[in-house]
Length: 223
Image 1: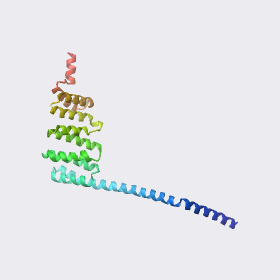
Image 2: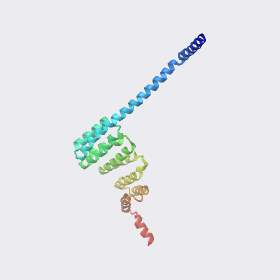
Image 3: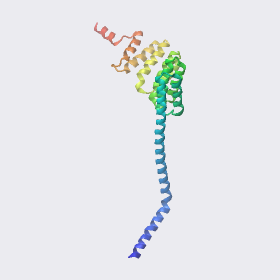
Image 4: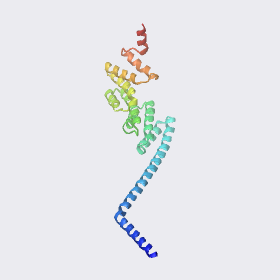
């Protein structure tokens, strides 16, 4: 009986040896690759968390400078965020906020540079498009109308379509292209919810171009 079991065990051992000889290397490579991928995934997650934590701490420093209206410290902290954590949302947010402070401090050129960085390198499309909208406004202030229109052309987010049309209308009106400006304002008005107060601003712009407001149109129809 024992001899019979020994023979069976020997056969099984030979089968295992044959299997391992044929497939052992492949199995080893597959397992190694799987373990390496898991380790890399774990390492990437840790890196992301570590980066986010460090960026968050630096952003807290930026916010303290921003609250104190200390432009030098705020700009330095925003610069550090862009240099070390450009891929995080913290860097984009800091760029947008420091641009506002720079503008408040009459540093329009610096504000344009800050917004240009976010527009080109911001971590998420919404940040980039907000920066472009604000940058276009500063370009209009600088009478760089063609540059403003190019900046607006780069905005692709549909939720900003009405605001883009409104700002395009401003650029065209400043170039004395009244008919084209009117068309953009009408597009902007059509894209803004009726409950939003900003509609009255666009209606006022259209009124200067001879387009009656909704109230005026309704009054005229009633008469």
